[in-house]
Length: 213
Image 1 (cartoon, rainbow, N blue to C red):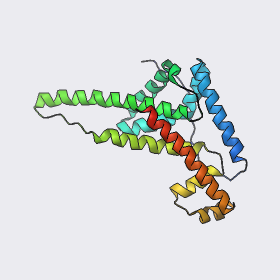
Image 2 (tube, helix red, strand yellow):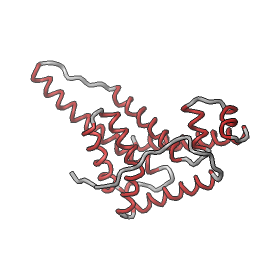
Image 3 (cartoon, rainbow, N blue to C red):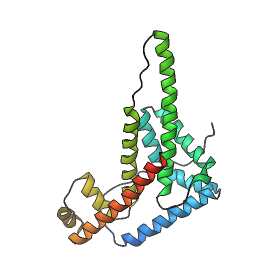
Image 4 (cartoon, rainbow, N blue to C red):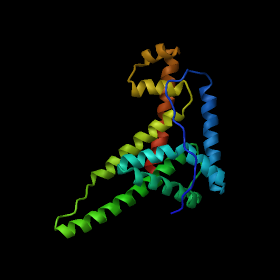
């Protein structure tokens, strides 16, 4: 299998100081992601390295949680980005397409690993005269894991103060009033950030669900 020596991606942190200019920054990031996708489709190898650097942690975490085997997770991660390069012409560039498209590829690769494991289990079961075991709930669980990871990644990619506001709202379950006190913004501004953030997350999830079909 082709191995691509991409650089490792550094960890992200929540709760950094709140700054202004979130909307313009977010629009700029959307433009950068769309441009990055367009460069990949055009065959720019440097774009593939940038995509790996930004989203390999998401793909690897999903694969590891789905397969529960570090070796298989590493293998799937490499396969996803090799497949992304080979099938780049199937990607339609947009601000939310890249992570959804990558997770869609990852889900297919995880399914391939599961199928291989099932075949091995069937062969073993035949040897010891036991029925093979197939758990259809695994795919549903994979879907849930993928969506949770995409949501987390999408929140991490947001600029502050929206990133901090969504983190406080959904991970710490703070009320809008508590968040407003915490970040020092008007209550209406906090509610607006939550509403716009939810719209962004909805777009990400719709992309993942579409790519997995």
